[in-house]
Amino acid sequence: MTQLGSPATESGSDDRARPPGSRLARRRRALLGVGIAAALLAVGGLIGASFVKSPQQLAADTAAPPPAVTTAAVVSQILTSSVQMRGVVYPATQYDVYPSAPDSSSSSGSPGSSGSSGGGGSSAPVYISKLDVAAGSTVRNGEQLAELDGQPLFALAGPVPAWRDLTPGETGSDVTELQQALASLGYYDGGDTAGYFGAATEYAVSLYYEHIGYIPPSSGGI
Image (cartoon, rainbow, N blue to C red; front, side, top):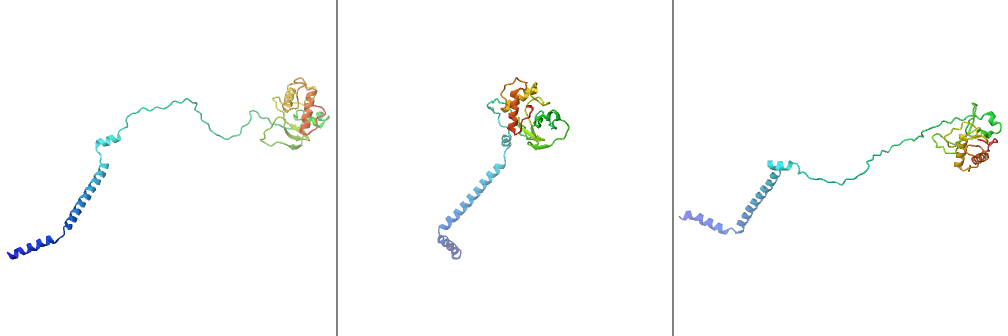
């Protein structure tokens, strides 16, 4: 009896000798382990729920949205489309000017009678002593183009070609055109009947020649 009871007596003494704090620590560790396991299970459940969906949920996610009425303000305007391009604009009508030497009969009176028309010109060669314009330049009314054999070659605006030399006493539509061109330049202010080369037209021609720096023709014409 004494031998069997001695171990029990020793064990009871050991339990009484342990401090109560060790039992609390074991309980805390056990509760902490259970909490961590529960948290891991909860996180895993949430992750699994985000990937695993029921057929009803899949059908709801992929269904078309319900129809809706869309309105917008109506604006009335002209639709235009513009395209920017680069190019060279040419006039509808172009004239090639070929200077010729003044006729001997018309130049006997004065070298200035060659004028700008070259209209009674011959096939004799000419000497271009001055060139005032370049290829592609814009020619204005009354502008001097060149100097041929010392006499001016100039341009006067008008639809009638300069097909002849004009002298005092001449009549015609080309005379009217000459008067209109000189009037637009400020040299002619009337005084002659339209289409008649009178004293007022002759005076306007002499003013124009003096303005461009040349002696007017002795014939008084152009």
